Amino acid sequence: MKKPLHVKCIGAVLLLFALSKTTHAQLSLQGQLRTRTEIRDGAGNLPTTGAKPAAFTSQRTSLIFGYRWDRLTFGVNVRDVRVWGQDAASINNTDGSRLFLHEAWAEIILANSTDTTLKFRAFDNLSLKVGRQELVYDDVRLLGNLDWLQQGRRFDMALLKGMKNGWQIDLGVAFNQNSDAFGRAGTFYTAANAPATVANSKGAFVSIPTDFIPTSGKGGAPLLASPLSTNGQNQMFKSMQMLYVSRKFGQTKFSGLFFKDDFQKYRIDSLGSAANGVVYGRRYDVEGVNSRLTYGAMLTGLIGHASAKLGTIAWQAFGYRQGGRNRDGQHLNAYHYGANILIQKSKLSFGPGYEVLSGNNTVSPDGKDHRFDPLYGTPHKHWGYMDYFYVGTGAPTGGLTNAFFKTKYVANANLYFTFDIHHFALANDMKNGLDAAGGKISRPLGNEFDFILNYNLNPFTNAELGYSYLKGSNSLEYAKLGTMDQTKHHAHWAYLMLTVRPDFLYAKVVK
Image (cartoon, rainbow, N blue to C red; front, side, top):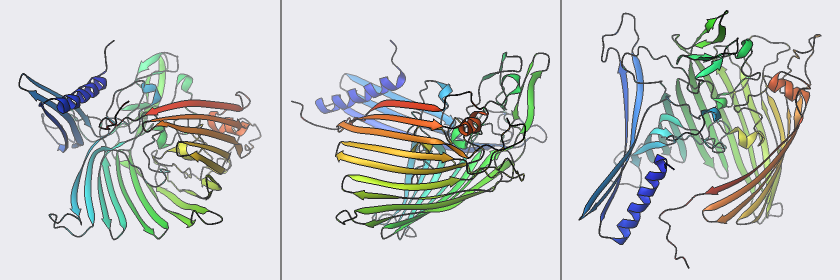
């Protein structure tokens, strides 16, 4: 059986470490990260009249292993080359098994108050982090690494990180492009993860051009009844700018976020003909972007101490708004707010919470989009482990309210249990399109119950057993699929996950 490249690389590294400790051989391990931002307006060929300059950032990442002995010299250079934005932030499950580069970055220290050789003193600490990297902020509600998914999430970007008098100030920018090909004009960007083929109105599968994203399947039906959030990754941003600030005041932490993501404009187009079959979709070759603004703040705090009679109370409150235009160019006015507490006494912690993500009132629409999109966070952590909302399976147009109660029991240092209850409902009224009288569906969507048992087998191995049950309503079926009484309203899900994280330099005498 042929071993994949990453298995060979890991084996080579382990062999080199072993040889370096048992012989007088010389071992070298080096890395390189090189980014290059270019603006091309005639590179390789003269540009056509009216052609726009093309801009992109390319990145090369290398790991270089070397071994030298008096009778042998050995070298391996593992290299990854890509264009920022060429891959989506998170690959689709339909992409199948893939070997890819999750992170490759370098952080340059510009200021450090403890380093006397650095003369810049405007910040206590200042660094520039460039390359493919994760964004993990606060409770990963809006920005997170989506670690629950096997493929995770990362961004090609530059992040300036500063610390001053207890304040954390992070500035981030990203600009995505599909390729750095010569002869490419303009900076039109088509999101990654677009399907390579799709069934047309006649049921025949046809190839999809690189600048086209289909919006309808066989018979012109929508590919998904409920809209995807950007967590669903059916449209990656073209560019992004962010500002994050935070500071602790005693046992209370304040954090503020401003996040602007820009989406390539498009035009409605189709492939094929009525006689042979048609695919309707969007062609991303229009000048300009639709810019979405997300801004708000979060407060977290701790009351009491472990030895107190009531234990400790951890609390959280947050509020965010979205404005500008959504990725389709519609005016956006949406909000997300909530609060929760967690009481911890000895080994047991428990507490309630409530949050609202606004949606569109389809009974009385006003022409604006009021559906809050939770950006690039980790929905699995907040809206039920069965992932019904704000993931690749879509979410209700009418938004979501989530009333929950969470419990956790820590038996010992290696074993804990959690049990969570969620009551989901629509935040806004949705019209019942299956009702000839034009009524609306009821707001309650259903209840979910999540149980987890987590156990550390040893310092490097963890086992997790989970079970979830959801009792849904016809409203949930309609909001997600556009049907009623055509699915089971009782859902079950269970998993067993084994995680091994070895430390290759960990030394322990084995009996």
